[in-house]
Length: 93
Image (tube, rainbow, N blue to C red):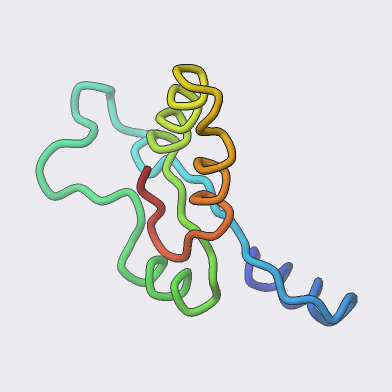
């Protein structure tokens, strides 16, 4: 759906933009079973599509890290926002 929306925006405005997909791949797992072993938040296919279409994949964990970074040091908000907006593939802060 995000790729379709990006294409629709391009068609309507003639302007190519980046997209951001925020996801919580572990939402159905109990908290004590999250982020252990080889569990990934985004599938290999999702990562490949995101990289090919300039889409940033931001986990809710990384979103929370961004929030904490800005709370801790408000001078970093521009830097943090740029990383999120301009990321392609998995966004790490």
